[in-house]
Image 1 (cartoon, helix red, strand yellow):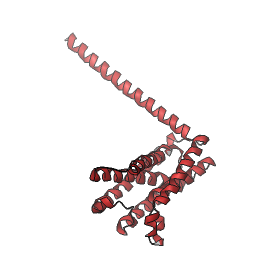
Image 2 (cartoon, one colour):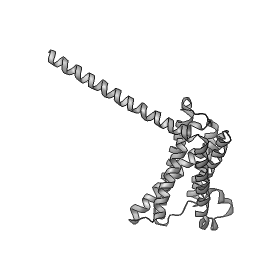
Image 3 (cartoon, rainbow, N blue to C red):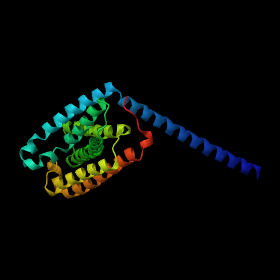
Image 4 (spheres, rainbow, N blue to C red):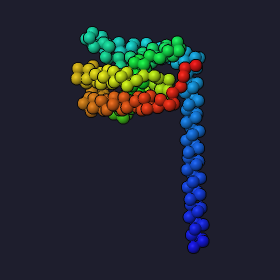
Length: 229
């Protein structure tokens, strides 16, 4: 009987110790992320992020030049999805450098950066799977767009948008899906055009996921907000 009790006590102690270690590791990771996010808000880092995103935005619009030539003028604003997302972030960074928050632009930035960043990663991975290879530009696009998606999330403690701003960003994003897949203004991936219906369906749900993430990270996590230095 005493032997069985001893075994049960040891099991309980092991479970308690393991739980403590997991909790401790989780707290360490959380503190490291917060420290990294604090560093991201420092002016020298903001300047570096501004320069990177400015050049990325300019290159993005240049990348769309051939499609824009064939695009009706009234659709211009809806075609270059990724560079417009990074343009929103450039404006956000300008605000941060001036120690100002621009709530609506922040909402547009976090939603569209994540959505179009992940979308581009998925599209290029699909091209790789179908074609069996990818040019170096494809790998560059995967890396840059993944970074684009992540940066918008990392700066979430500095955003100050409200629900109304997120609703406007949601309307913009879902309306853009209509323009892309009803009026066929989506970015051109010739190898994937046979799957355009499936891609359009996936894109809609990616929009929803992006909106929900923005809500959870900013509107649900107000106690973890950071102030601009």
